[in-house]
Amino acid sequence: MTEPTATVGTGPVSLDTVRRAVEAYADNPSAFLALNSGNSYFCVPGLEGVVVYRESGRYLVQFAGPFAPAASYRPLLDGFAAHARERRRRVVAIQLQRADAVAYREQGFVVNQIGASYAVDLSGFSLRGSKFMQLRNKVSRAVRAGLTVYEVDQPDWAARMAKLDAHWLHGKGKHAKPLEFLVGEYGGPMQPYRRLFVGVQDSKLLGYISYAPVPGGRPGWLHDLSRRLPEGPPGVSEAINLTAVEAFRAEGCRWLHFGFTPFTGLAPDLEVPGASRPFGWLVGQLGRRGAAVYPAATQLAYKLKWGPQAVIPEYIAFSARASLRGFLHVFKVSNAL
Image 1 (tube, rainbow, N blue to C red):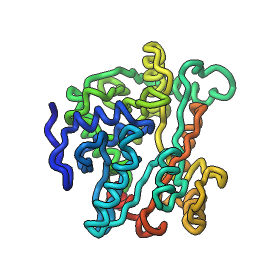
Image 2: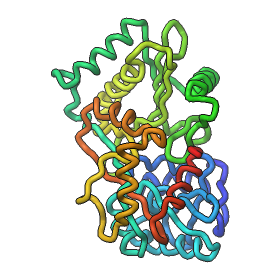
Image 3: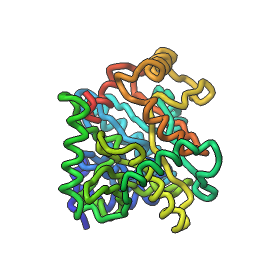
Image 4: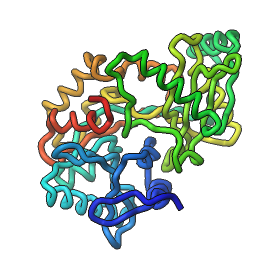
């Protein structure tokens, strides 16, 4: 059993308890991020399931919907909303799936689409054809430059990964900080459930990708935290991911998820009734002009080059009116501000 993590108002809950709830009840490609260090968990005695959140100012920023069976889902959501009101806090929930969005709207939240996640069906995956010519060329260039890809145990590579992280972050500018909450991590008690692939050239670490398990209706792996040496040859990330894809396919894995990209995949017909028009306009503007806020276009280009078959809308919900202030607290707990 892992060390317990404090749960506000209900006593301690172990990470293994949270993990079992995620495995049993989650239908969210990013669900394993619920186990990131620094998260808090809300439970109601007698109810199955957990709510995952972080606190920021007057807000409780919730990650995904409750990880709970159908019988507990809405009572748990009600309990969390009441807990927030008792503490004079508002709730903003991020990365809700469509079913969550409908449930939150019915519970009185204001809900808007905030982006989408992308997934590739590995059952028929192939890089043949002109569609993937550029991707094949990038992988070939990395291999010709001497790149070799391995699946490894993270503890053996921790020091080299930390060094690469520091170098990568330095290249982002002096004010750059590592993101949290909506991106994965490595190490810690949950590391045995993740998988790590590294790209090496002459024993030098050029890049890595960490993959997290995905439960639910499209089970498989999430292409999660990734880093590459900025001055390394082109195609490092693509070669690492292709090696992972081949390993997952050999094991009979059906889906590779590329995770959530905010401000992408937006469509009016994907909104739920009662969505905020001003907030929807803001999200659309960020998608078109928000590169300085978040590099959505760059992320999306990488994901689309793999030809995803599933584009899954994701949502944000506000317990009060939709507001820029509430949205900014998502950035704050993500270490983006």
